[in-house]
Every structure is written in C-alpha cells, then in structure tokens.
Length: 116
Image 1: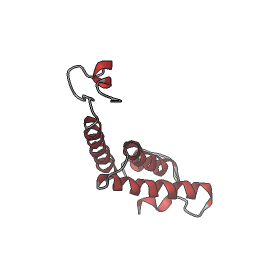
Image 2: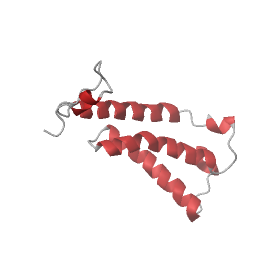
Image 3: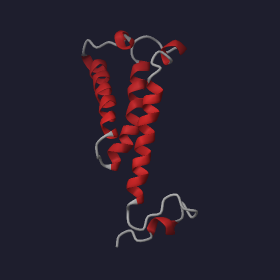
C-alpha cells in the first residue's frame, strides 16, 4: 500500500495526515454538489495539500516516491478543471459581470451592473 510508511500511530503527524486525507476525499464532493465559490477554490488546492502531506511524511522524498501515486495527477487536475469551470459559470451569472470578453480585466467589465 502506498500510505503504509506513513506514521498513523497518533500524535500531531498522524492527526494532520488523517485530516489531510479526509479533506482530499471531501474535495470529490465538490464535483457533484452545489457548494459556495470559496469552497470550490479550497477544493482546487486541497488535493495538493494531501499530496504534500504524503510526500513529506515517512521516508525521504525521492523521484520514486513522487511517482508512486500515478492516479494523483489526473485526479487533482480533474478536480481543478471542473471547479474552475463551475466558478466561471457562477461568476458569469452575476448581473453585469462579463467574463471572457475582449475588455477582460478592465474596471468597466467588472463593475457594470454590480450592486444594482
């Protein structure tokens, strides 16, 4: 098992590893439920925190350890892409907010109609 070298015996490290794993699994829920934008943004970063917890706990980091979880990268990138798309969709539904237009980034494109 990939996580067999991680010290789950308790203590602060075991607690952090456990919470990190729980948060990583919970990030999956943002793919099929409606959640606030701030939670979607957090779900983009949580898998990477979980992966960092895996890398820096237990034995020293080497190339073999980095590639020992080949399914991680498609999982983390997939969660990020789905959540970014949904954030853009949610932001596009705000009144007067234009996302992806030619005047992207200007004050007028963001402030039109907001607060009315």
